[in-house]
Length: 380
Image (tube, rainbow, N blue to C red; front, top):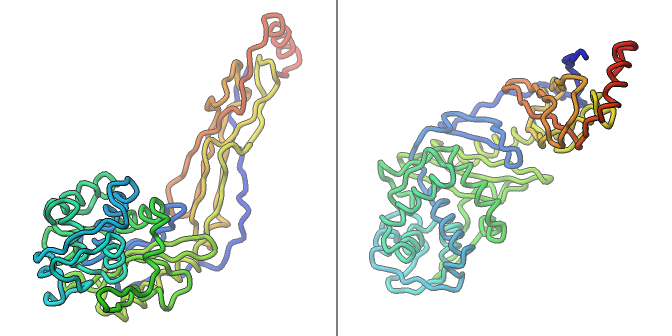
Protein backbone atom coordinates (compact mmCIF):
# COMPACT_ATOMS: atom_id res chain seq x y z
CA UNK A 1 0.00 0.00 0.00
CA UNK A 2 1.27 3.49 -0.87
CA UNK A 3 0.24 6.36 1.42
CA UNK A 4 0.06 9.75 -0.26
CA UNK A 5 -0.20 13.20 1.25
CA UNK A 6 -2.86 15.49 -0.14
CA UNK A 7 -3.59 19.18 0.23
CA UNK A 8 -7.16 20.18 -0.56
CA UNK A 9 -7.69 23.92 -0.99
CA UNK A 10 -11.12 25.05 0.16
CA UNK A 11 -12.25 28.46 -1.07
CA UNK A 12 -13.72 30.75 1.57
CA UNK A 13 -16.50 32.55 -0.28
CA UNK A 14 -16.70 36.16 0.90
CA UNK A 15 -17.03 39.12 -1.40
CA UNK A 16 -14.25 41.59 -0.59
CA UNK A 17 -15.17 45.21 0.04
CA UNK A 18 -13.01 48.20 -0.73
CA UNK A 19 -9.62 48.35 0.97
CA UNK A 20 -9.73 49.15 4.68
CA UNK A 21 -8.79 52.71 5.49
CA UNK A 22 -5.87 53.27 7.84
CA UNK A 23 -6.80 54.44 11.33
CA UNK A 24 -5.16 57.31 13.18
CA UNK A 25 -6.03 58.49 16.70
CA UNK A 26 -4.87 61.23 19.03
CA UNK A 27 -5.05 58.85 22.02
CA UNK A 28 -1.65 57.77 23.34
CA UNK A 29 -2.65 54.27 24.45
CA UNK A 30 -5.37 52.37 22.62
CA UNK A 31 -6.95 48.99 22.03
CA UNK A 32 -10.05 47.96 20.06
CA UNK A 33 -11.25 44.39 20.51
CA UNK A 34 -14.08 42.34 19.06
CA UNK A 35 -15.80 40.88 22.11
CA UNK A 36 -17.00 37.72 20.36
CA UNK A 37 -13.78 36.61 18.69
CA UNK A 38 -11.25 38.29 20.99
CA UNK A 39 -9.43 39.60 17.91
CA UNK A 40 -7.60 42.93 18.18
CA UNK A 41 -8.70 45.35 15.47
CA UNK A 42 -6.39 48.18 16.55
CA UNK A 43 -3.68 48.53 19.18
CA UNK A 44 -1.16 51.21 20.13
CA UNK A 45 1.05 50.74 23.21
CA UNK A 46 -1.81 48.62 24.52
CA UNK A 47 0.29 46.61 27.00
CA UNK A 48 2.06 49.59 28.58
CA UNK A 49 1.24 50.13 32.25
CA UNK A 50 -0.11 53.68 32.61
CA UNK A 51 -2.21 55.62 35.12
CA UNK A 52 -5.80 54.39 34.61
CA UNK A 53 -7.57 57.17 36.55
CA UNK A 54 -11.19 56.20 37.30
CA UNK A 55 -11.14 53.38 34.76
CA UNK A 56 -9.52 51.32 37.53
CA UNK A 57 -12.89 51.48 39.30
CA UNK A 58 -13.86 48.62 36.97
CA UNK A 59 -11.83 46.31 39.21
CA UNK A 60 -13.57 47.69 42.31
CA UNK A 61 -16.87 47.02 40.57
CA UNK A 62 -15.80 43.51 39.59
CA UNK A 63 -15.02 42.55 43.19
CA UNK A 64 -18.39 43.86 44.42
CA UNK A 65 -20.28 42.01 41.67
CA UNK A 66 -18.38 38.80 42.33
CA UNK A 67 -19.32 38.94 46.02
CA UNK A 68 -22.94 39.53 45.07
CA UNK A 69 -22.86 36.51 42.76
CA UNK A 70 -21.23 34.34 45.41
CA UNK A 71 -23.77 35.32 48.06
CA UNK A 72 -21.22 37.11 50.25
CA UNK A 73 -23.13 40.36 49.73
CA UNK A 74 -26.69 41.33 48.87
CA UNK A 75 -27.93 44.50 47.22
CA UNK A 76 -29.84 45.31 50.43
CA UNK A 77 -26.76 45.15 52.69
CA UNK A 78 -25.83 48.54 54.17
CA UNK A 79 -22.35 49.98 54.67
CA UNK A 80 -21.36 52.77 57.06
CA UNK A 81 -19.63 55.86 55.65
CA UNK A 82 -16.45 56.57 57.59
CA UNK A 83 -14.91 60.00 58.08
CA UNK A 84 -11.91 58.77 56.09
CA UNK A 85 -14.11 57.87 53.11
CA UNK A 86 -15.91 61.20 53.37
CA UNK A 87 -12.69 63.22 53.53
CA UNK A 88 -10.71 61.32 50.86
CA UNK A 89 -13.58 60.85 48.45
CA UNK A 90 -15.81 63.84 49.13
CA UNK A 91 -16.39 67.00 47.14
CA UNK A 92 -13.68 68.89 49.06
CA UNK A 93 -10.98 66.84 47.27
CA UNK A 94 -12.12 68.09 43.88
CA UNK A 95 -12.70 64.57 42.53
CA UNK A 96 -15.91 62.85 41.50
CA UNK A 97 -18.17 62.05 44.43
CA UNK A 98 -21.48 60.47 45.36
CA UNK A 99 -21.93 63.15 48.07
CA UNK A 100 -22.14 60.65 50.92
CA UNK A 101 -22.34 61.91 54.50
CA UNK A 102 -20.30 60.86 57.54
CA UNK A 103 -21.95 57.92 59.38
CA UNK A 104 -24.55 57.55 56.65
CA UNK A 105 -25.74 54.02 56.00
CA UNK A 106 -25.88 53.31 52.28
CA UNK A 107 -27.00 50.15 50.47
CA UNK A 108 -24.69 48.14 48.26
CA UNK A 109 -27.10 48.75 45.37
CA UNK A 110 -26.79 52.52 45.77
CA UNK A 111 -23.02 52.27 46.10
CA UNK A 112 -22.85 50.34 42.83
CA UNK A 113 -24.78 53.07 41.05
CA UNK A 114 -22.69 55.71 42.78
CA UNK A 115 -19.52 54.09 41.44
CA UNK A 116 -20.73 53.18 37.96
CA UNK A 117 -22.86 56.23 37.11
CA UNK A 118 -21.41 58.99 39.31
CA UNK A 119 -17.83 57.64 39.52
CA UNK A 120 -17.91 58.37 43.25
CA UNK A 121 -14.53 58.13 44.94
CA UNK A 122 -16.28 58.17 48.31
CA UNK A 123 -18.47 55.23 47.23
CA UNK A 124 -15.38 53.21 46.28
CA UNK A 125 -13.66 53.83 49.61
CA UNK A 126 -16.81 52.96 51.57
CA UNK A 127 -17.09 49.66 49.68
CA UNK A 128 -13.39 48.91 50.15
CA UNK A 129 -13.40 49.59 53.90
CA UNK A 130 -16.54 47.58 54.58
CA UNK A 131 -15.54 44.61 52.42
CA UNK A 132 -11.86 44.28 53.35
CA UNK A 133 -11.44 46.36 56.51
CA UNK A 134 -9.28 49.02 54.86
CA UNK A 135 -8.75 50.46 51.41
CA UNK A 136 -5.14 49.25 51.37
CA UNK A 137 -6.22 45.65 51.99
CA UNK A 138 -8.94 45.96 49.35
CA UNK A 139 -6.38 47.28 46.83
CA UNK A 140 -4.25 44.22 47.54
CA UNK A 141 -7.30 42.08 46.80
CA UNK A 142 -7.76 43.99 43.54
CA UNK A 143 -4.20 43.21 42.45
CA UNK A 144 -4.62 39.55 43.39
CA UNK A 145 -7.90 39.28 41.51
CA UNK A 146 -6.35 40.94 38.46
CA UNK A 147 -3.73 38.20 38.31
CA UNK A 148 -6.43 35.52 38.65
CA UNK A 149 -8.27 37.05 35.70
CA UNK A 150 -5.14 37.03 33.55
CA UNK A 151 -4.48 40.77 33.70
CA UNK A 152 -0.71 40.89 33.29
CA UNK A 153 -0.13 44.63 33.52
CA UNK A 154 -2.22 45.89 36.44
CA UNK A 155 -1.30 47.01 39.94
CA UNK A 156 -3.52 48.75 42.50
CA UNK A 157 -2.92 50.75 45.68
CA UNK A 158 -6.38 52.29 45.97
CA UNK A 159 -9.98 51.59 44.99
CA UNK A 160 -10.60 54.87 43.18
CA UNK A 161 -7.89 55.48 40.59
CA UNK A 162 -6.76 58.66 42.35
CA UNK A 163 -3.15 59.47 41.37
CA UNK A 164 -0.45 57.21 42.78
CA UNK A 165 2.76 56.11 41.05
CA UNK A 166 1.95 52.45 41.75
CA UNK A 167 -1.63 52.54 40.42
CA UNK A 168 -1.23 51.26 36.86
CA UNK A 169 -3.17 49.36 34.20
CA UNK A 170 -2.76 48.67 30.49
CA UNK A 171 -5.43 49.28 27.88
CA UNK A 172 -5.32 45.56 27.08
CA UNK A 173 -6.11 44.68 30.70
CA UNK A 174 -8.98 47.17 30.76
CA UNK A 175 -10.48 45.59 27.64
CA UNK A 176 -10.14 42.08 29.09
CA UNK A 177 -11.68 43.19 32.38
CA UNK A 178 -14.56 44.89 30.60
CA UNK A 179 -15.33 41.79 28.55
CA UNK A 180 -15.21 39.69 31.73
CA UNK A 181 -17.69 41.98 33.52
CA UNK A 182 -20.07 41.90 30.54
CA UNK A 183 -19.92 38.11 30.23
CA UNK A 184 -19.95 37.17 33.91
CA UNK A 185 -22.54 39.63 35.24
CA UNK A 186 -25.24 40.16 32.59
CA UNK A 187 -27.84 40.75 35.32
CA UNK A 188 -25.95 43.83 36.51
CA UNK A 189 -24.51 45.15 33.27
CA UNK A 190 -27.53 47.37 32.57
CA UNK A 191 -26.28 49.70 35.34
CA UNK A 192 -23.51 50.91 33.02
CA UNK A 193 -26.03 52.35 30.56
CA UNK A 194 -28.16 54.19 33.15
CA UNK A 195 -27.78 57.89 32.41
CA UNK A 196 -28.62 59.44 35.79
CA UNK A 197 -28.62 58.61 39.49
CA UNK A 198 -29.81 60.70 42.42
CA UNK A 199 -28.46 60.33 45.96
CA UNK A 200 -28.99 62.64 48.93
CA UNK A 201 -31.09 64.81 46.64
CA UNK A 202 -28.24 65.39 44.20
CA UNK A 203 -28.84 64.19 40.64
CA UNK A 204 -25.78 63.39 38.52
CA UNK A 205 -25.43 62.19 34.95
CA UNK A 206 -23.38 59.30 33.65
CA UNK A 207 -20.02 60.65 32.47
CA UNK A 208 -19.81 58.27 29.48
CA UNK A 209 -20.36 60.55 26.45
CA UNK A 210 -21.13 57.71 24.05
CA UNK A 211 -24.37 56.93 25.90
CA UNK A 212 -25.79 60.20 24.62
CA UNK A 213 -24.55 60.31 21.04
CA UNK A 214 -23.63 56.84 19.71
CA UNK A 215 -26.04 54.11 18.68
CA UNK A 216 -25.45 50.87 20.59
CA UNK A 217 -23.23 52.32 23.34
CA UNK A 218 -23.93 50.68 26.71
CA UNK A 219 -20.83 51.12 28.92
CA UNK A 220 -18.33 51.27 30.61
CA UNK A 221 -16.14 53.83 32.45
CA UNK A 222 -14.54 57.24 31.97
CA UNK A 223 -11.47 58.57 33.72
CA UNK A 224 -9.47 61.75 34.07
CA UNK A 225 -6.45 62.93 36.02
CA UNK A 226 -3.76 65.40 35.01
CA UNK A 227 -1.24 62.58 34.59
CA UNK A 228 -3.55 60.18 32.72
CA UNK A 229 -5.33 62.74 30.58
CA UNK A 230 -8.88 62.05 29.49
CA UNK A 231 -9.69 58.33 29.24
CA UNK A 232 -12.55 56.04 28.31
CA UNK A 233 -13.18 52.32 28.33
CA UNK A 234 -16.23 51.82 26.13
CA UNK A 235 -18.53 49.15 24.77
CA UNK A 236 -20.83 49.37 21.76
CA UNK A 237 -23.15 46.62 20.54
CA UNK A 238 -24.76 46.65 17.10
CA UNK A 239 -26.72 43.88 15.39
CA UNK A 240 -25.47 41.33 17.91
CA UNK A 241 -21.80 42.28 17.52
CA UNK A 242 -19.93 44.00 20.37
CA UNK A 243 -16.72 46.04 20.22
CA UNK A 244 -14.77 47.09 23.31
CA UNK A 245 -12.21 49.88 23.35
CA UNK A 246 -9.90 51.36 25.96
CA UNK A 247 -8.21 54.70 25.26
CA UNK A 248 -6.06 56.99 27.36
CA UNK A 249 -4.02 60.17 27.10
CA UNK A 250 -6.48 62.46 25.33
CA UNK A 251 -6.43 66.21 25.90
CA UNK A 252 -10.07 67.08 26.56
CA UNK A 253 -13.55 65.69 27.14
CA UNK A 254 -14.41 66.62 23.55
CA UNK A 255 -11.39 64.81 22.17
CA UNK A 256 -12.16 61.76 24.35
CA UNK A 257 -15.65 61.54 22.92
CA UNK A 258 -14.66 62.19 19.31
CA UNK A 259 -11.69 59.80 19.25
CA UNK A 260 -13.60 56.94 20.85
CA UNK A 261 -16.57 57.39 18.55
CA UNK A 262 -14.24 57.55 15.54
CA UNK A 263 -12.45 54.34 16.55
CA UNK A 264 -15.68 52.45 17.21
CA UNK A 265 -17.24 53.57 13.92
CA UNK A 266 -14.11 52.50 12.05
CA UNK A 267 -14.19 49.07 13.70
CA UNK A 268 -17.80 48.40 12.73
CA UNK A 269 -17.32 49.80 9.22
CA UNK A 270 -14.08 48.12 8.22
CA UNK A 271 -14.36 44.68 9.88
CA UNK A 272 -16.84 41.83 10.06
CA UNK A 273 -16.97 38.47 11.81
CA UNK A 274 -16.73 35.30 9.73
CA UNK A 275 -17.52 31.73 10.69
CA UNK A 276 -14.74 29.78 8.95
CA UNK A 277 -15.68 26.35 10.30
CA UNK A 278 -17.66 24.75 13.11
CA UNK A 279 -16.64 21.85 15.29
CA UNK A 280 -17.89 18.67 13.59
CA UNK A 281 -18.10 20.13 10.08
CA UNK A 282 -17.20 17.50 7.46
CA UNK A 283 -14.20 18.72 5.48
CA UNK A 284 -13.36 15.64 3.39
CA UNK A 285 -14.07 11.91 3.12
CA UNK A 286 -11.01 9.70 2.55
CA UNK A 287 -10.51 5.97 1.92
CA UNK A 288 -9.66 3.52 4.69
CA UNK A 289 -7.19 0.65 4.24
CA UNK A 290 -8.08 -2.69 5.80
CA UNK A 291 -11.16 -1.32 7.53
CA UNK A 292 -14.65 -2.73 8.04
CA UNK A 293 -15.80 0.44 6.24
CA UNK A 294 -14.28 1.83 3.07
CA UNK A 295 -14.05 5.49 4.08
CA UNK A 296 -13.94 7.89 7.00
CA UNK A 297 -14.96 11.53 7.23
CA UNK A 298 -12.51 14.16 8.38
CA UNK A 299 -14.25 16.66 10.64
CA UNK A 300 -13.13 19.97 12.13
CA UNK A 301 -11.98 19.58 15.75
CA UNK A 302 -13.05 23.08 16.79
CA UNK A 303 -14.92 26.24 15.87
CA UNK A 304 -13.03 28.97 14.04
CA UNK A 305 -14.77 32.37 14.23
CA UNK A 306 -12.61 35.33 13.22
CA UNK A 307 -12.79 39.09 12.85
CA UNK A 308 -11.38 39.96 9.43
CA UNK A 309 -11.10 43.22 7.55
CA UNK A 310 -13.68 43.37 4.80
CA UNK A 311 -10.90 44.06 2.31
CA UNK A 312 -9.04 40.91 3.40
CA UNK A 313 -11.95 38.49 3.67
CA UNK A 314 -11.80 37.49 0.01
CA UNK A 315 -8.13 36.56 0.42
CA UNK A 316 -8.68 33.95 3.15
CA UNK A 317 -7.29 30.54 2.12
CA UNK A 318 -8.28 27.29 3.84
CA UNK A 319 -6.26 24.14 3.09
CA UNK A 320 -6.93 20.58 4.33
CA UNK A 321 -3.76 18.50 4.61
CA UNK A 322 -4.04 14.72 5.13
CA UNK A 323 -2.64 11.31 4.16
CA UNK A 324 -4.70 8.76 2.30
CA UNK A 325 -5.62 6.03 2.63
CA UNK A 326 -5.65 5.84 6.42
CA UNK A 327 -5.06 2.43 7.97
CA UNK A 328 -7.63 0.77 10.24
CA UNK A 329 -8.37 0.48 13.12
CA UNK A 330 -9.53 4.06 13.63
CA UNK A 331 -11.00 5.59 16.77
CA UNK A 332 -13.47 8.47 16.66
CA UNK A 333 -11.49 11.64 17.40
CA UNK A 334 -8.17 10.31 16.05
CA UNK A 335 -6.22 13.10 14.35
CA UNK A 336 -6.00 12.28 10.64
CA UNK A 337 -5.01 15.64 9.19
CA UNK A 338 -4.92 19.41 9.65
CA UNK A 339 -6.86 22.42 8.45
CA UNK A 340 -4.63 25.41 7.74
CA UNK A 341 -6.32 28.82 7.64
CA UNK A 342 -4.38 31.68 6.07
CA UNK A 343 -5.70 35.18 6.77
CA UNK A 344 -3.94 38.34 5.55
CA UNK A 345 -1.70 39.99 8.16
CA UNK A 346 -1.93 37.26 10.80
CA UNK A 347 -0.22 33.97 11.63
CA UNK A 348 -1.50 30.78 10.00
CA UNK A 349 -4.16 29.11 12.13
CA UNK A 350 -3.93 25.31 12.30
CA UNK A 351 -6.63 23.03 13.69
CA UNK A 352 -6.92 19.25 13.74
CA UNK A 353 -9.04 17.16 11.39
CA UNK A 354 -10.31 14.08 13.20
CA UNK A 355 -12.16 10.86 12.42
CA UNK A 356 -15.93 11.12 12.71
CA UNK A 357 -16.40 7.51 13.93
CA UNK A 358 -14.76 4.25 14.96
CA UNK A 359 -13.78 1.88 12.17
CA UNK A 360 -12.66 -1.61 13.08
CA UNK A 361 -9.96 -3.57 11.28
CA UNK A 362 -11.05 -6.20 8.77
CA UNK A 363 -10.82 -9.86 9.74
CA UNK A 364 -7.82 -11.85 8.53
CA UNK A 365 -9.59 -13.39 5.52
CA UNK A 366 -10.89 -10.00 4.36
CA UNK A 367 -7.40 -8.50 4.75
CA UNK A 368 -5.92 -11.23 2.51
CA UNK A 369 -8.52 -10.51 -0.19
CA UNK A 370 -7.85 -6.74 0.12
CA UNK A 371 -4.10 -7.29 -0.34
CA UNK A 372 -4.66 -9.39 -3.43
CA UNK A 373 -6.98 -6.75 -4.94
CA UNK A 374 -4.40 -4.06 -4.28
CA UNK A 375 -1.55 -6.11 -5.82
CA UNK A 376 -3.55 -7.02 -8.92
CA UNK A 377 -5.75 -3.99 -9.50
CA UNK A 378 -4.03 -1.25 -7.48
CA UNK A 379 -7.23 -0.37 -5.63
CA UNK A 380 -7.72 -0.05 -1.87
